[in-house]
Image (spheres, rainbow, N blue to C red):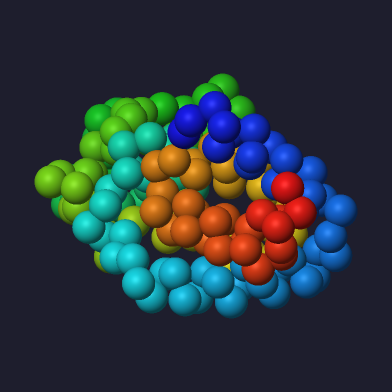
Length: 157
């Protein structure tokens, strides 16, 4: 992302924070529904190349069953676990990405299914984290750019 776009997005974040959250959420939901319909994220894989994915114990168990391996072997091969029991995939890009496609797509983890989180409320509160992925995710890029138009940000700045 270029420096000018970065400054623009920082100004947009401030701009959005001064708007009604429910109105912004409604705009994002509408724009996201349209954009997601036009972009096939299974042909991209950019998020799989850059995200750190948290995994629950149920997901670890389900993935190990799907991959026909013991959960212990699955964890040893694919998971890093903190002393507090938090688990993350131990590789970026993700182990399960092959030719820009997820090899466990039907059994992918919740964080993978939920990304880019544009269908959740409180968009303004998550905008900083969303903008981290602005340059890698075509869905986020297009939703943010359309939101700038919808909110008249571009006319005011």
